[in-house]
Image 1 (tube, one colour):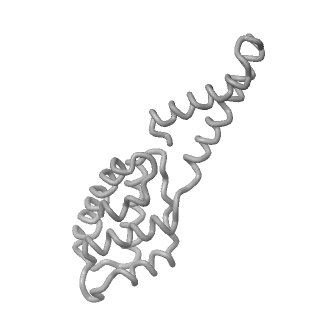
Image 2 (cartoon, rainbow, N blue to C red):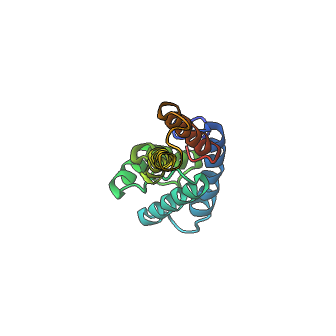
Image 3 (cartoon, one colour):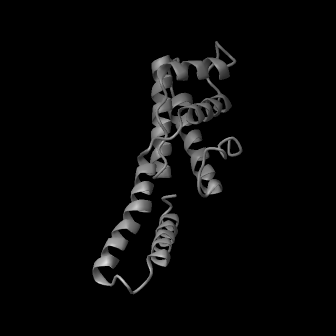
Length: 159
């Protein structure tokens, strides 16, 4: 599972892979293996949605989209080999991986990054121009503020 999800994690890949793997396993145990009745398509869709929601809570800034019903049905039919049997953990992990890759990320984290990457340097430049316009040349000031913003975002795990 960890190897398959390496392509999904941005930033500190190993950390995110270690966070996602146990979540998928826990959700499998709760929603698939723990179910006493036969798994319907509605139950399976709910299990996938709950799993993606738990992954989103764990990752913080990265948010995965919930897949469309047709995409989910195609992935289920592609990976579930034992048609009369219950879904295995390996099949569930493959389905989740495919759905996350296909549906991708929402733009919530990207909006924050763009806001900070452009908003902070522009605001800092405006304040500098009002307070001390000749203290530091703009050619040096803007890259320093932008670099400091990137460094701070990296330390806060926003990027």
